[in-house]
Image (spheres, rainbow, N blue to C red):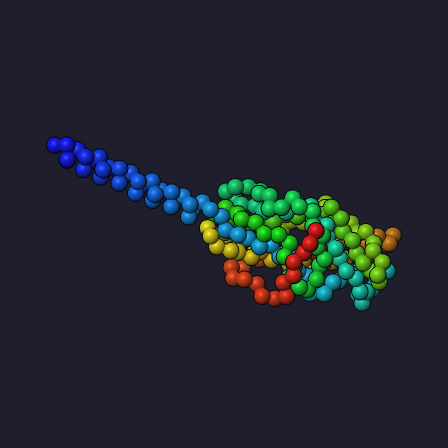
Length: 193
């Protein structure tokens, strides 16, 4: 009788251990995040227009970003980074940050921009950005983050720079955001703060 009780207890312990291990493995693989790499690029040349602006004017644009957020239908807005970074828009991909995000679908991105500097003919000039926030949907169904996998989010920013009649520059960018699921190979550079 003692042997059958001992065997039953041992079997019950084994079943409990296996069940706990299975639940733990399920939780680990379904709840751990995937790494998302955030890139920014200017897909074409810069454009300028307005009173006194020439489409042939050569200039560089620098954005100082103080916050990056991403939106999930199930989790709402999530902070990706509150680190202040300065990004020069160029045709090369600039890695601006990376973050492990919970699995799910993300549909929109938002940047808080504290300043815009335009370098025109070697001279730095401040420009304004209406609202100080850049916000755009992620096209083609959004960004799907999968546990243990990497994803790559590219922010294509076509900066439309307007020179107003009073000599002030205003940045009115056209933004497209797209997700990729294999490493990017085109001229990636790392942005520093």
